[in-house]
Length: 171
Length: 217
Image 1 (cartoon, rainbow over the protein chains, first blue to last red):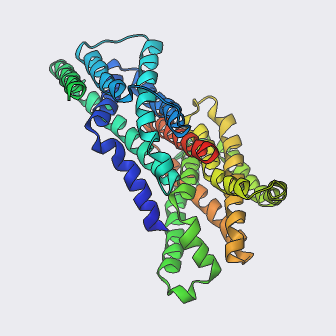
Image 2 (cartoon, each protein chain N blue to C red):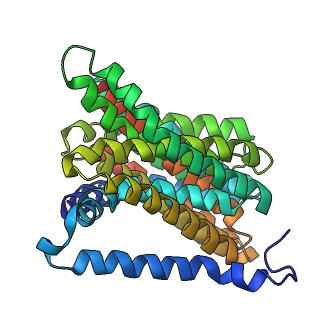
Image 3 (cartoon, chains in turn red, green):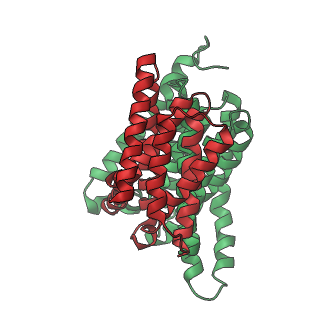
């Protein structure tokens, strides 16, 4: 029983980690929040998993969501560009943007859910992994924000993420 | 009253959680490492049903939410959980009686699948709610999580056929909540206030996805 659970949680946990596009987008959500500062540090990371569920449920229902992979690649480009430009939009614009991308990522994870033996464990694994990548992004962002020089570093990191998104789009 | 304020109880309360955790973990370890034929129904229930992430994690999360509350509100939350776990044990009979009237067995399966998402949702709402609302929402979440845990105990009980499983289940649920709430309260850090809503949102995500898969999948 415990072994079966570990397998379910493990396969869910590695799902966001093994896809570099998923990983970079989640990391960028945390990084962007940290760069914006204030309540945005945690607000984006709180909103993302809850909105991701909508995409997951669309996938469970079998409803088509065209160009999901394009949406995921665009999420990496957009979030990386936002960090690169140090864009600090109002809260609702940031949340709307995050919501759109969260649905794409949730859909991609959700397509795997009904196929698994233990959906609870799979859902637990991938939601926790997603959240931990956000926390990693927040942590790196908060550390890099501490000095003026490192504030530039965070923008370079954003540009690198955006370039990776372009790569995902082309390949 | 804040933890660590100069009362004669503060030292005791600071270590009550870890002591409770250690004592309970010792009992669980003895049960798990005892020979299979010596475990008995309660031991088997503990090893194969209760000690699962899907049932323990929401309780730990709820305990964390109670740890973020002022003392009095935390106690109200704990009381609500205790009331939920005891009353849920009785209420589930009426629910099962209603469900078995429905033709086919799929509905009963759905009921068993919804117990864990309900517990995750209750704990998630308690954790993710803003600090000023949490004292009101956490007891409601605790009541729901208690009822969900009692339902899980009762739904798994027929497999083991021992009424002692119900009492053990109630004790186990109360132990997990009390241990996590007291331990986290004793070593509370300012960043818990930010971590709470983040982890709460994970729980809500898990609940909605898993509940959605149970209802729609």
